[in-house]
Image (cartoon, rainbow, N blue to C red; front, side):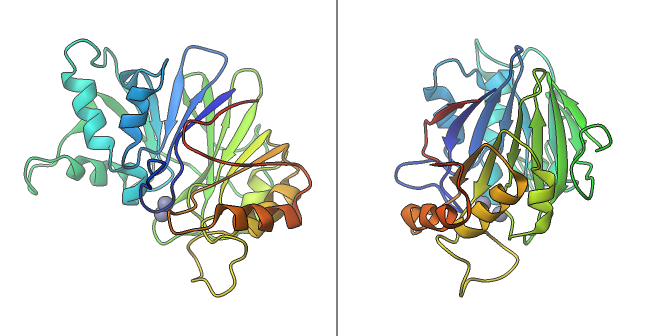
Length: 265
Ligand SMILES: [Zn+2]
Ligand SMILES: [Zn+2]
């Protein structure tokens, strides 16, 4: 599986990275875009081998830093003179996604944009307990199986797990506060892409919103993943501190995400 970090800046786009957006390619022809925050469509255009009209889209949640380039993607898919979408792709997200997205690019507040011409909209289904691919509910998205579990955040939000046809697996925390669910859901995954927006620890930070590097490291250790990738550090945050926190808890490989990073696993 290949993971391209299009944008990893937490909460807002930063001077050296768009906001959240991750491109996933498996062994087949299909690809999935996870979140499309501000600046992500720009990064897609700048990345060789990515055709914006040729991917499925999965949303972790509908905060602005994870979805506000979506109206521009619709323009690209519908109106690009030579590279418009030639088929419908899957859009998988929270139950509130359709309403949010149909308003984001609407001409007027009372005329939501019906996106069913270009996306088949589906809603995450969650499982509970220790992850088991055989019993957990899932959606088939292109060549991938996509699983979800509830995140702890200020809006409807999901942890996402993606398996490709070769059996490789990858978990994306989206935005979440520390929760035992993450380690249970990420059991045995090859890679955990985990937010560490709070820096080294969560001491003194608001509850129910984000994780620290230390909490990300603890989740990676408890889940037994091979690689931990830290992400969603805001421009005012401290990536080195997030890394220090994670290293306290996790002995495996730890990578700090940056825009343009390509990971093969
Ligand atoms: Zn965010
Ligand atoms: Zn959020």
